[in-house]
Image (cartoon, rainbow, N blue to C red; front, side, top):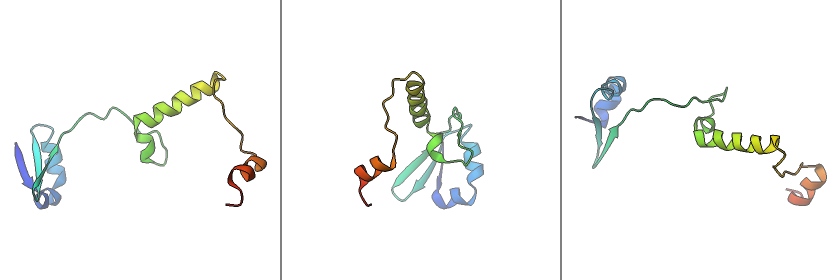
Length: 92
């Protein structure tokens, strides 16, 4: 295991990130130690703008679940007409 200070890590992060692929790497900062643990990227961000919200597989799964319900006609939703908007939100 290699342990480095946060200052040493920040001077050459790519070296330590690559090293973490073959051995355990820890960064010591004050009284805390942070371990670098690589794992394969199993999910791709589907957002064209790179919005990190869509990089979370739970958010994509929820969207897919709701789209499936809508296609099956099982989703209850309300169209926000100007009248409903006025009723719900008043003059916000």
